[in-house]
Image (cartoon, rainbow, N blue to C red):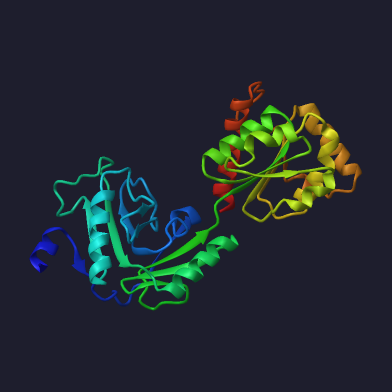
Length: 321
């Protein structure tokens, strides 16, 4: 059995090297798909990369006890093989290291990108650790996760080979009326981002109600307080009736939202700033307000505008992370 495992590149984990600090990396919550499986039996994560890599260091794949898989570590070229190793790890209770690409014993499994991947496959964490991880992910607050051959730890681990900083995924708070708000909310919800669409217009809310987004009816601008905001939330306004904007924007600019933007021309943006300035909004807060929004200037199609704004927000999310 040992000879077979070595031939397939799967060996029991040796002790961590001494005298060297752990590697460090940052991932998003979606790279740690623990909410997708009720009872995972094993986890596989990228420990190191060499050259090009489809997924980041720390990206994790979870294997369910019934064979379900959540997450991916490649573009599909090695995931099935990793899942087979994960089944064995779940049964044996012993971690494994796997090497793919350059220097791998798996000559029949190639990485088209030409890089190399070191994968660590671990038995599932204990129920207590798993519950703690899920609670932290749900709380949308950054946390650190230590990775070693002994497993995952939310505290300091002197044996850690890798320390991950886990950040919440971007969340979108969309405010507005009409096709632009609907197109943008559809796009971000369809991409899998947590999305809230808030509008005074029930016709704007209807296409997204029960379709991947949370909808919030705003009977008056002050109802904006119902919409959850944190440092990983982008607030985007799509109003043609700009009288709705000041109260919503004051609320967004007073929050920790990493992006605040509003649809409109340059003249509209200048008028918006003047109204907010007259209402007593500080210059430092006004400097955070984007407008016109999007990476494509002067778009006149709702879908193009949605893609343009999404690109701008995600570029900002990388910087904010």
